[in-house]
Length: 383
Picture 1 (cartoon, rainbow, N blue to C red):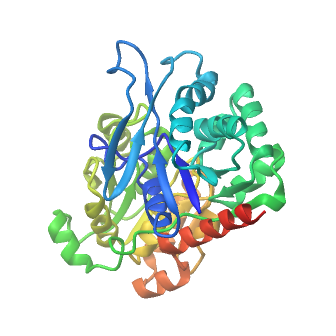
Picture 2: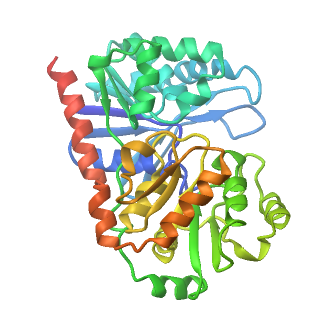
């Protein structure tokens, strides 16, 4: 089986954590199918070098990065059309010597819509994987219309959460072609590690209760609610935020909220961290917290569980699919401080055995996820 996989969101040397979960699924799938990867790069005159296709290798996986014209800030509802028009010649050239059986797109926008247009031109079946991007598209009527058409014509739709699947079906996706396959975890990196050893290596206090959040500092990650909840927890509880500035959220905005809430001395900002270090932060914590306003399938929850660390998370995206309660943590309403505070108190007061957390959560490897994805592809090829 030959699969051509598309994702605008893929790691680069400049941003190695960008789309790491897309790389992980793609890399695992490459063990079971003949796979090529296309990660298109938006290009606009004067803002980037000329529009040549770059080829590279990311941890053993060959990546082609054809460029396509786009307009920064303006005409964003046309991004998928520009994407399709720009890379279609590259895809046609590839097909002269290597004909894919399936086009695999990792996001509904712009990948899924663009790939639906390319597939229509080439007569190749396509699959769309739904992640949190669909919720952003729902704000734009033009994007909703384009996404709806792409979903209706897809040979299969893979959703990382049941909630996203329901939304797609409401838009017109065929329920019989829908599969819910949550993300997996890199078990070689995210596993049980000795807590105090991790705290020492990271320079974290060994005599405190530690909460950790792994997320960028943008407002929609709910950091302000966590900080306000922290103010209602005992003085020996501190919060470690692992992530960098994004969407208007900066260390300064975070610390301003912490000072207003009276917990400035109980906040530790680490900035962005390497993949290996993130696993140590999870293992160093008594619990992790993710108070997002929206998510697809939050890897931070899966990775925390794989380290045996319980999770307090808001009821968004795939959280209900991947976080069993009370066996591995607590689920609370989004944007509400009081339930979040009570959930954190409850989880911090309990005694957690890391092995039991892992057993309750049933976290799966990326290889297991890839086999499920391959099964979906097989059905299409047979049909």
